[in-house]
Image 1 (cartoon, rainbow, N blue to C red):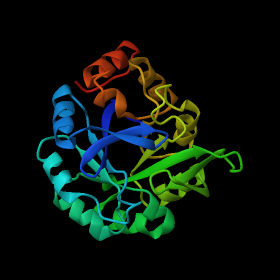
Image 2 (image 1 turned 30 degrees about the vertical axis):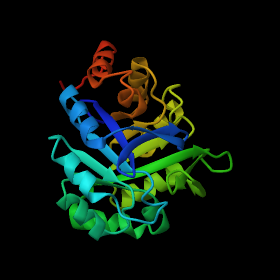
Image 3 (image 1 turned 60 degrees about the horizontal axis):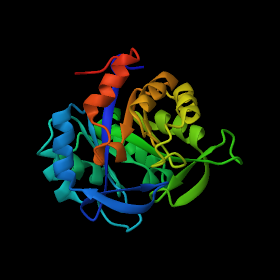
Length: 254
């Protein structure tokens, strides 16, 4: 859909620190979110995504002070998710510097939340975050999970994406739990299927391990590519990923 493809580093935050694991498990600390956000902004990131990965599990709000300090260091769009359960939560996050807000578990529990947020703040503010796992028993072969990937539902991922878009979701953040942290590449089948059902931008997430992995995700239908551990570890920079995309004929913002 987009003429220019976006590169988005993701800050998975727990207890105020950036963490990363494999398949959403065995999380380890990777650094300070404010410092990392500043580094990625300086490298040329198009956006920053900040996900409080334990807020829903711990039944608490997102860490607002960390979000605010992060927002003060970057001057590109900041998407924040984790623990968002109401339109009031969205208002508070926008008030501390978020530009967009991601919802996942609470929207699955109460789909009306999607419309409530979109009606009050506009679809452009609402990112539907889908933590997707392969599930042979579903129509598409993919199901969504809740609570940071810990709870598998029987809700078909494509059907839920379609419904959420109809309710007002302005963007899909599609994260493959099976590929997450493996560094084996994005789940291109999942990206392609989401592109077929989505009338809004699709962000591919989960599995990036090499600069060569990003262009195939764009070719499969992603409007943006998101990664975490390859950036946090210093294995890749935003600049290197954009160079690799350009080499494959993908237009990026410099």
